[in-house]
Image 1 (cartoon, one colour):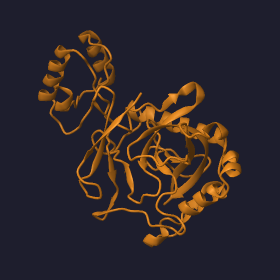
Image 2 (cartoon, helix red, strand yellow):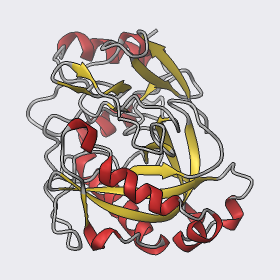
Image 3 (cartoon, helix red, strand yellow):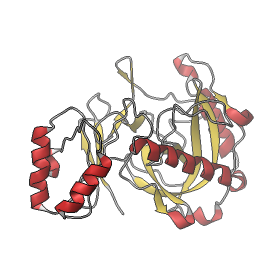
Amino acid sequence: MSFTIEERGKPNTLDYRVFFRNTEGKHVSPFHDIPIYADEAQNIFHAVVEVPRWTNAKMEIATKDPLNPLKQDIKKGTLRYVANVFPHKGYIWNYGAIPQTWEDPGHKDADTGCCGDNDPIDICDIGYKVCSRGEVIKVKVLGTLALIDEGETDWKVIVINMEDPEANNFNNIDDVRRLKPGYLEATFEWFKKYKVPDGKPENQFAFNGEFKDRDFALKTVKETHEFWKSLISKKTNAGELNCSICVCTESSQLKKLYLCFYRVFSTKTVIFVFLQSSQLKQFYLCFYRVFSTKTVQFVFLQSLLN
């Protein structure tokens, strides 16, 4: 499974966005539509690279926007950049997120004592390759650090790109200590101090800043996947998050039906539905199961109807 990106606007501007397309050329959400697993049996995950190593622009998945493109974080109307914290230049890993995960702000973690930060779970790829913005990579989970960011649990999962020639040598957090000495200490110091140049205090950590091992990290990732399932099935209140699901179909008859729904339910809320079958009967059944509510808000992007 592969994905391509579509950049709109100029980098380092308020209008800049990075959208994602699947192999069929359809727009997809990096938050909801890219599968969490690249190989579930082997616990290999997909990860979306938001910030390539050595860069400073604080890019992130826009969880509240339709299709959830990458955009640069903004504070008080100004684009955000991380400072260079000596001796480092920008981010010291490829930084990103695992799709189809969500750190639930309504769930108080039993270990950290804090609720989630309302975002997909973050990853730090320690592989040798400097990835591209928007690149979707396959990663192996090695461990995790529990950052407490302004009172919220913000897991930082340490991973390695499966394309790394040394990936087979890394299977747990102790392998990082042994094969990349100083990297975990630098990671801890980076997260502790990266907000200090902005006038904020040092960040705090659960477990006294101890990195937890692979098994603990896998449990955490899979738990956030369950939170995401509850979010997307509307068992959990999404708040301002955009929980779009994409529409894929080959039937021109269905496209006309979708267009009819678009004209009738032209609301601001954007909902896309994945359909693998071209049969109208199965579409109706899917529609009933997903949208069995009194009010149906249903909008289809024109690009999906071409």
